[in-house]
Picture 1: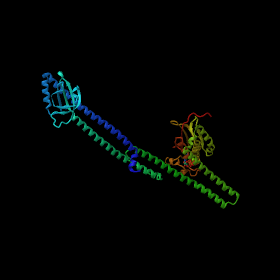
Picture 2: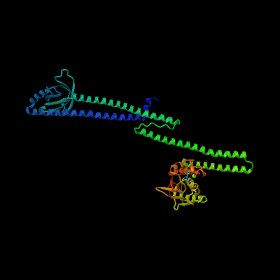
Picture 3: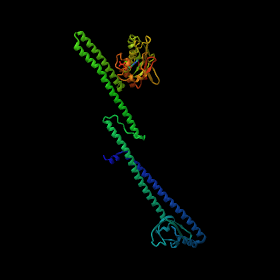
Picture 4: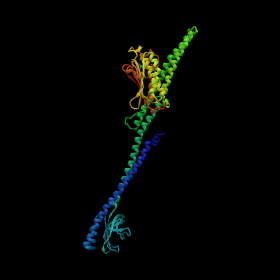
Length: 470
Ligand SMILES: Nc1ncnc2c1ncn2[C@@H]1O[C@H](COP(=O)(O)OP(=O)(O)OP(=O)(O)O)[C@@H](O)[C@H]1O
Ligand SMILES: [Mg+2]
């Protein structure tokens, strides 16, 4: 498309055209009003002066009759101005004045009228126009006083010409301004289009140009840039996750393979094969667990789990998890307590919430066991389900273990991250990631706090409606 063709198709061009038309119409209306008003004013001025002349001449008549009036009219008619005077008898015979000829039949009228005329002393005998008033005097005499309209017509034509010129200038300037503005806008849009092309070709680091004027194009560019920022971060995250997955699954798979190879190479009897196979199964189970955890996180993060929401009692879930993990806690020399006396209605995905809470309890048991912390015997783990601020239900797990240093808390939540001091424990570093994904799925947060001593982890969930009857 040519540059001009592109220009004509822009919204800015169409808008300019509409504004220009509206403005030109408006300007024309103003000019017409102005011209009409000037004409009216001049006409008014003429009628006033003619009225005054008639009054003065009538006075002359009253003072000295027709002779004095004739004399006065002749005297005035000789003045070199644009007034017209004529005095006739009832038969139309001229007695005095400066009018040579008039439009036929004009003298029969009374009052104001416009007429064509020739001046008596005008040798070229050109036709002029005048506004005249005709009055009837006693005795059938007729008196005409008027004034030439040339001045008024000239004034009007000046106004009209000036109006036409200014209208033309307005339109030209409007078009020039419109084209200038549109070219600027088009240039920016073109720059944006060019950047989007490079982004579409895979260079996610590209950003739309922002002119800094704060106009709507800037706002659009800003918003799109923020969106690109977010997409880039997500893509980076995805890249990291797939790198992590590849890396973290490669190790156990290599171990699995080596174990099999070694068994093939060195095992001599059935019992050794059996031991190798049992090890393989154990290793595979761990792998399957990791895959399951990853799938669950993906499910929570994709938002598909939102279709699976229901009303349930989080207090009941807490009690269930407490019962499930109590023997394990006991084995490790821990006391697991559940503090969930009142119903805590939640609207959410029950399976995912249970798994998230189980992960937190599992962590507390794994990392806060007394043989690792060497603190007082029988430290407590408390699982709590209670109403929080606003319309939230909080699921909290507190332990008295070593806790997580503030600097490591953000990192600990990331996928496959296991802190240095917990390497001796089994795990793949996905427990907290799932808890966080579940919290986000429900529009909440996973928070890690200091329990002095130990760690307190909280998942906030939206309060649900009344619970369905059991
Ligand atoms: N209650 C806790 N006390 C001390 N450290 C903790 C606690 N909970 C988690 N951590 C630290 O945070 C890390 C991440 O925990 P996360 O639950 O995500 O993974 P994991 O327990 O190592 O493995 P997984 O839960 O997948 O079996 C842990 O490796 C541990 O270092
Ligand atoms: Mg864990």
